[in-house]
Amino acid sequence: MFRIVRLARLERVAGAGGGALESRVWTIPNVLSMLRLALVPVFLILIVAGEYVWALGVLVVASLSDLLDGYLARRLNQVTRLGKLLDPAADRLYIFAALVGLAAQGLVPWWIVVVIVSRDVFLLVLGVILANHGYGPLPVHMLGKIATFALFFGLPVILLGLAFPETSAAAEPLGWAITIWGAFLYWWAGIIYAIETARVIRIPRVDPGPGSDTLEN
Image (cartoon, rainbow, N blue to C red):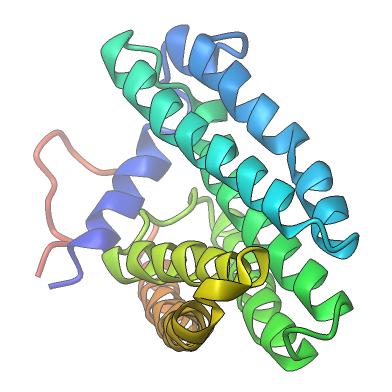
């Protein structure tokens, strides 16, 4: 178990060994990710202004570009370190924008915003701790992916009910159920990351040999 600990160690050993492609910035997938990030403030302004149909349209465009940049990165062999940072950053910013916009309209309680944002602050602290011990970020846990997907799906469903009132009787309860469940999973994944971080930083500082797999239990 905890194979992820071994992966963290390998990340530490290979930290400076990326090729030229890994460090590239201006690739097609990265440009798409940057455009998606540029639409975040537009998305937030539309929600605050009560333009829910247009906000939903921006979210659809952003979601399609997310799928496209992932496909192109693999298809064109243009997976880069920047892309690995931009993609999850964009997902989180859209979640935060939806939360803040809906909360500003009084449609979502602020405690939901605090619960979700505080979890990412918590992970940021864990990342600083790992960096201070010479490690990069831990690999993304599957539960974290599920939680992010739940939030990225639940909040737009709530938005759908606001954009098209005829769907609100079904969309809003469904969206709320998925969002609350996603928030719970979000923190559950955060606790798992904390346990893994504690395990990683207790690893003795030794130079791994060519076949050293001693961290895998």
